Length: 138
Ligand code: SME
Image 1 (spheres, helix red, strand yellow):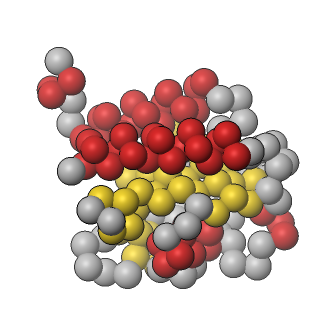
Image 2 (cartoon, helix red, strand yellow; image 1 turned 120 degrees about the vertical axis):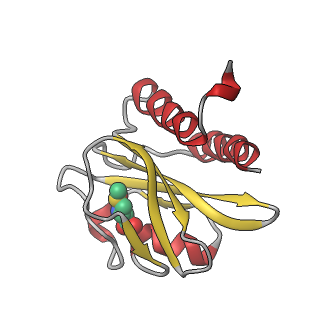
Image 3 (cartoon, rainbow, N blue to C red; image 1 turned 180 degrees about the vertical axis):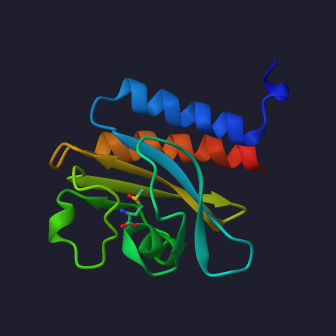
């Protein structure tokens, strides 16, 4: 049964589901706040390994979402000054925060090799996924 799956296994399954079912979701992963520290740590992910396993608050798209508590849709990563490149094949990115008891505890980060692919429907869908993740974590 589901209870036998650890939280990380369940989060990895979500990454796999998203990456394998949406053609323009090419890297899907979770970053979580590291306790009381103002930094994010990489959690389960699917896609190319990244050197950026720790991201300070404020740095890159992910670090900005940790501070703003807002969705961040980037149609063209090359137009961003505050951006951390993980792979040169990435063209666009979407980051959606995850809230537990009203606190921003992490995020889903998705990279795409397609330019400007993310719509309002992606935001609404990923907000729904983040709510489910929030339930898994609380
Ligand atoms: N591009 C992100 C860094 C994480 S990688 O996409 C996996 C950023 O600018 O925060």
